[in-house]
Amino acid sequence: MSNGTILVVEDDLGLREALVDTLLLGGFRCIEASDGASALVQLNQNPIDMVISDVQMAGMDGLTLLKNLRAKDCQLPILLMTAYGSIDAAVEAMRYGATDYLSKPFAPQVLLDQISRYMRAQPVETDQPVVGDPSSKQLLTLAARVAQSDASVMVLGPSGSGKEVLARYIHNRSKRSGAAFVAINCAAIPDNMLEATLFGYDKGAFTGAVQACPGKFEQAQGGTILLDEITEMDLNLQAKLLRVLQEREVERLGSRKTIRLDVRVLATSNRDLRLAVEQGRFREDLYYRLNVFPLTWPSLAQRSGDILPLANHLLGRHASRSGLPQPIIAACAVERLSCHSWPGNVRELDNVMQRAMILCNGERLTAADLFIDGEAFSSPIVNNPIAAEAMVEAPRVATQAKDLSSDLKHQEFQIIQDALKTLGGSRKGVAEKLGLSPRTLRYKMAKMRDEGYEIPA
Ligand SMILES: Nc1ncnc2c1ncn2[C@@H]1O[C@H](COP(=O)(O)OP(=O)(O)OP(=O)(O)O)[C@@H](O)[C@H]1O
Image 1 (cartoon, rainbow, N blue to C red):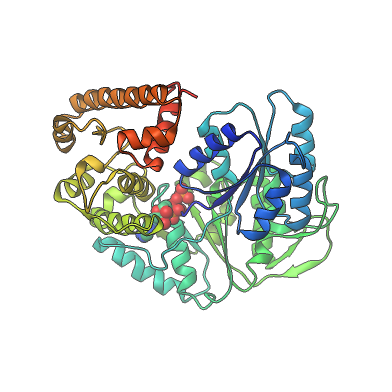
Image 2: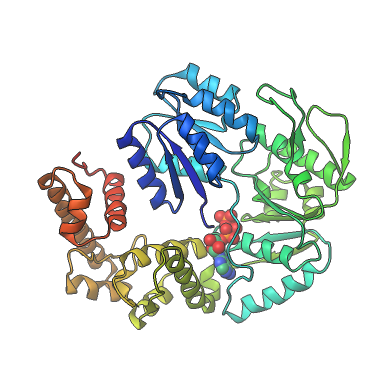
């Protein structure tokens, strides 16, 4: 997914910078505000997908900002950062409609995990899934045929394999393409909020329901709803969902008015559905209702003909986002991409291409620009030909290369740490001295932080 835009509201400049660095690394766009009032201005001027705000700020504090935001938009995800141990502030935040809260201090990964739980689904930029493997081409042809009907479709496949891309493709190829496509990730929303999110609620239906809000089904009226990771839905809610699907009508929470629905339902799961039914974790009647037409997108390793076309496509996407020309993938990089098993599927490939775009210095993307998790990495700063060699040979000498890589990474972090100390913490100075772009430096510093290196102030 293009990860979306986050408004970061924090009056402490240092902390705001650290938050922004972490979020940029996570692939999000960021807009900054130092208090509640300027946050409201930013919100009026920019499309925002999520807000992260401190509670204690001079001027308009986080809770007042929260109330203002909720009055304008009842669905915008808002995360509040509360001081450690400040239970009262956290409870109050939730009462006034915060989506969740983070208690300070928190690790960067905790922040990123919370964000991915609540981030609004982002439009996927490509209309047509990119494929190259004969099996994927067949699957697309089948999906295009299924799209013409109004049947429920269950898209199966491992995490990151492109299930949402396929679901959007079905919507775009259907007669409903002119209407909304509404995706909801059933695993990302806490059980007690999922029902209200799906079916909507009336004012006063529960504490914090300060105004009526339509649910996702209503928003998808005339179009398609995607129930992502449906097997994660709790059994009680599965029963309510089944009723909505059977009756084709919905009642908002706290309301007696029924609303007729004209919505096509698509669902995804990365579990073995039959097994989930056998284990009593997924209702059999719901299984049959949703599984009218199952389509399975296998792991990337099982359709290796897709790897290179996808790598080029994803690289092009990152190049155009950074306003840079798209590099050509050199033969050594192609070999490395083809050798890897891609346990994280297309999402992992996307991350690798994003990093490669940052690391790549010229028109050619080489094996040394591919930073694959769990494999050797040759640093652009410590430009060591032995390490580059070790990377190309990675499948054969993985263990040796891994040791060398971690050694090089340590040296590189040491160099950055020393430069920061010498230059009194000036990032601009360090970037210039080491010949790195500010973005690459930020990326490396965030990695250092993750690995427990101390960053001189
Ligand atoms: N065939 C494809 N063509 C273009 N982009 C793709 C393709 N498959 C996956 N992607 C990209 O890979 C990323 C992951 O895809 P997607 O979110 O559809 O996977 P998923 O199977 O739904 O993942 P999850 O199970 O974690 O929800 C997205 O950035 C998407 O744009």
